[in-house]
Length: 77
Image 1 (cartoon, rainbow, N blue to C red):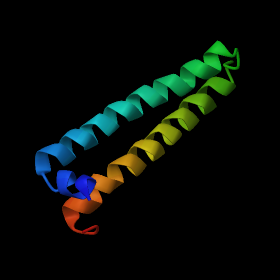
Image 2: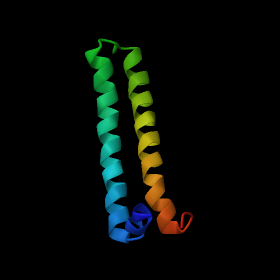
Image 3: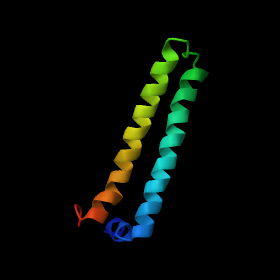
Image 4: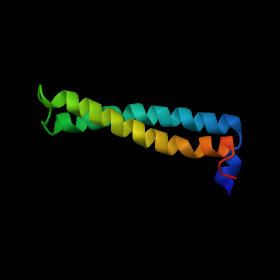
């Protein structure tokens, strides 16, 4: 209940969505660095790691950002 009331405020919802964008950037770098640390980045695998890491980061960020956007648009009451 408190989450819904909080995300009805435009500033709170936008701040949360911006924070999820920052989370996405961090996750993208984190995934790429994890494979590099494990020694799994070569000339052939690096582009795949970058694309996969970016895709996973975007997916997670959009998933978390969907809740405040759904509340702002009235999909969740």
